Image (cartoon, rainbow, N blue to C red; front, side, top):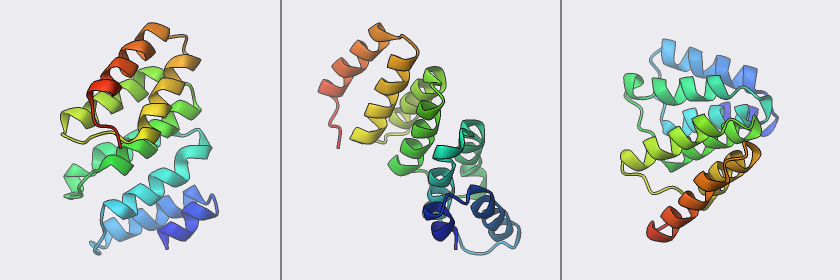
Length: 132
């Protein structure tokens, strides 16, 4: 299924499978979305990752740390520090404690965007937050 496409870098196929699952109103979960988002990381298609993350509540699918982390990594791959930072703060506002991977990805995106001051503020925030 969708998870196998993630592992083989078949993001187009995983996206098609997700669309069929949603259209057929078959059971799906955040894990299904997370697999598709993860498959998009290497494709430089961060807007699609953000779109999937945004679509989840309308599909009554719960987002979690992995959803945000995968989407943030997609933004980092494209040096999109603004979206990475926005997503990180959105996850925190939803009450999700960001994992170390998400934090590193936001810091990396900020570094690529020459946003050292923001990265320093994030490190301070990381010290105050219980990052897993």
